[in-house]
Length: 135
Image (tube, rainbow, N blue to C red; front, side):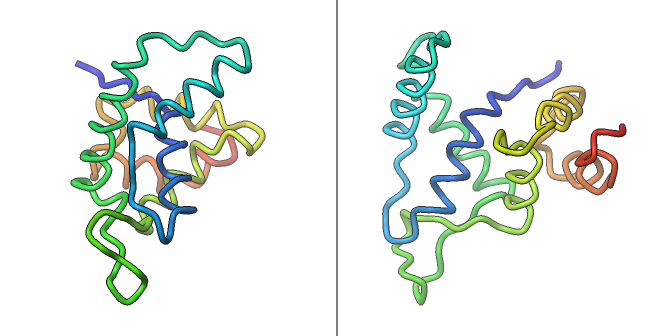
């Protein structure tokens, strides 16, 4: 069974990790903000409680699979805030909606059984063509 991810929500979470150096990571409010952004654009929001739960599931998955890690204490880490790992940075650059052509890498990821499986992601993200849209 193929796992399809909500790339927009994952992108939001990764940006929050990247920009939240002194703040605790709070996926539920990030999901609410994401839903508000969707509504402001006139896009369907769906079930907000489901979106919040999904954000919490993604936090756990991103941490377990090495896309984010606890922020080191010397950088203000308190066990409840994170930094992107090198893998997380690559994921964010692939799915970043501010980059023209971002739909193609997302489609390539969706074509995998589980795009965030560590070995699958390493294989797919190592293909130079994915970022250029040539796959």
